[in-house]
Length: 283
Image 1 (spheres, rainbow, N blue to C red):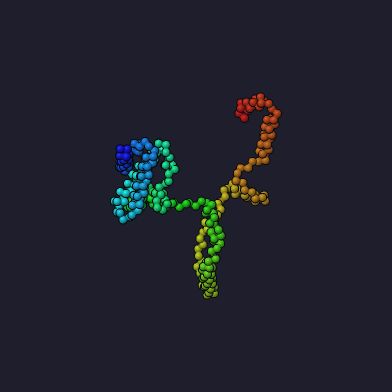
Image 2 (cartoon, rainbow, N blue to C red):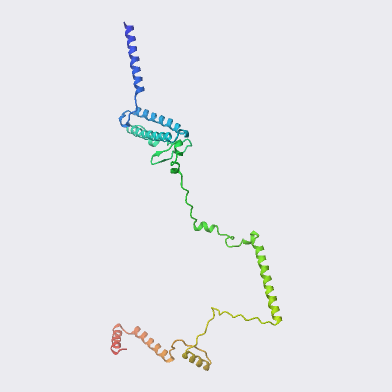
């Protein structure tokens, strides 16, 4: 009897173990991360999502899947990425590590960060789809404007024309023009000499009036009279302004000296009285 009871207990234990394993196999990931209240299970669901993302990223590398299949795969990967983010937030809430801070960045097969726009990322062949490549083409950087210091660095002897003769082109051209000018001058001189010897008079060319010629204006009567008086006295002097006489100069100096003495020795009261007297007299 004891032997049979032991066999029955063993069979019952195996049955329960099988049920537990079957339950684990059939256990599905919760739709919402907030429904999970156990940290180990949350970690398990996060690893499961990462595994699914890896498989789909490997599939999307095949450009022969077609545009529609590639777009669907890229959408599914982005959906799984968002779900992974929800589970990472839930793990942090349950006291687990902060994967958003310590977790690795999403990189492509070239080791570069996966490009994206406003949180939506493109993987594998999705980056070569029509309309996607243009999103990530960088515009050429504008040409940097040279500063005054950069421009001054380029100023050298060649800038001022001191090396124009070093190329071996300018000197032959100058020699050619110089030879031609000399020949023309000699020919002109010979022609003029022959015309002079033959007695032919060439018509004199009318000289053009120079714009720098200064025309003397006719002096006024007073100025001419003063000039004549100066010539008679032996001293040439031309007065353009009225000149005071010697008597007027002496009177002006006396008045100035009186004012200086009055300001120095007279009191303020006396000065005021003097000023009042002058005002009454109309001086």
